Image (tube, rainbow, N blue to C red; front, side, top):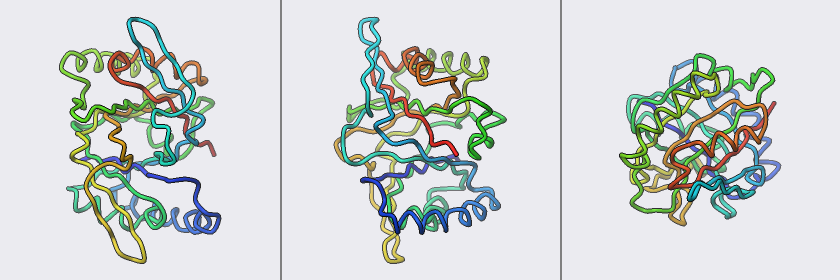
Length: 241
């Protein structure tokens, strides 16, 4: 079963914490990829690089900045393939990033799609293009993670079009926020909780990673996402090597 482990940050890490993570993360990645439980992962660029896209009454509305204006933000993710939640917890509890930040564990509602070159994205091999995360955000506590039955066929057609054009790297619809598990490791103790990292009621319902020539193209793709008519699409670039 596929899961996303969103990295939740409440600001930039302290220099000494960052030094520890940079030293320890490669060993964890090598071990978990060797076990076949970590498929890929990558940090996102900082929130101020984001744009939020909505379409209302046929008009595209673009605002600079992330969907959630808060100190807390999603800093990246790992895509995991585990037997069950217990195995995800075991894997993420060993992640050095969990010693200093939080991990929001979310299962996919259905099997996510991965391009055959998705692993290259995880290794920062972008081939002259730029990867962007298009995340569907909502602050509706009862939001349908698929965007509602009327949007599901249109969303699938949108994704199929991106795949045919060679623009989609990976993605899918996530299970509801009520399936989220929060994980932190402090002083060697794994601490678990229910719910998403952002505590103002906002959460991600779906994610697609796309390869684009520039930010303008990524914003245009977000504006064509069927969910943009009801929700908001946050467009964020990933860190480059």
